[in-house]
Length: 304
Image: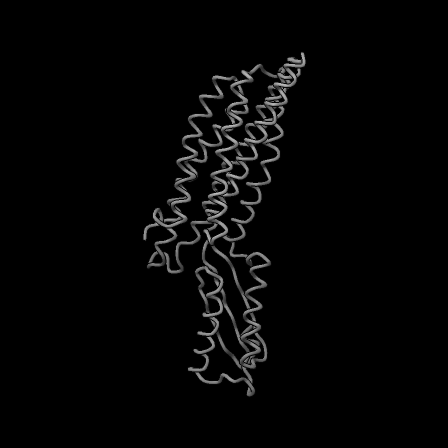
């Protein structure tokens, strides 16, 4: 099955095509109304198109598995893509933030409030729909790329809500006889939204680099792995167990070392293979690709 026909691939394609439509609509709408906030939304969507396409290609590459060039698999392409996406979106947010501050210092700008308000409503509804689709797939065992895409769309939907709220405030100010203050709403909202959005790509960058550097998986996942190994240790009467784990994209690498003594119920090669099979079955409940290495020793120094 190709990645574009998989549930993850379909979810990423939905994100990509929706972003493409929004990019065109928002850029045209933003220029027509004179709103920098809508233009920023359009640029964000435009960037998402290219980044979503990269995510689809990375997912396809990761699903090709191991070969002579990639003996451990291609899953590292997933966190690498997440980092690239996050850096690009962070750069776009910083650019918008600086530009908006410049407009505030220049006295704000006039926009077509009625059409801008209409855009805020359309963008918010559409963003909610796509966010729900991606979050549902993410919770159903989607890849890290889908989770990153879902986080991106949630942030974009919050941006659309901010757009809508800002234009409601601007309309209220204009109708109350303060058009001078309404001029500042658009650039001020760009500043607030850009600053609020920056932690999202920052979190994705940190998580992606953790995987690329083969650091330990998130604490909850690490705790689940250690709990499984402890259960097997007690079941077979091993003296000790040592666990090393890392998460790279959709693959979980686990190395387990058991210290065996005379009272352990597993002593032969066939019995050790039975322990491996038991571990493999227990890890199967994790619903992810597991690369597992299991060793046995009577001298704990070889397990350290």
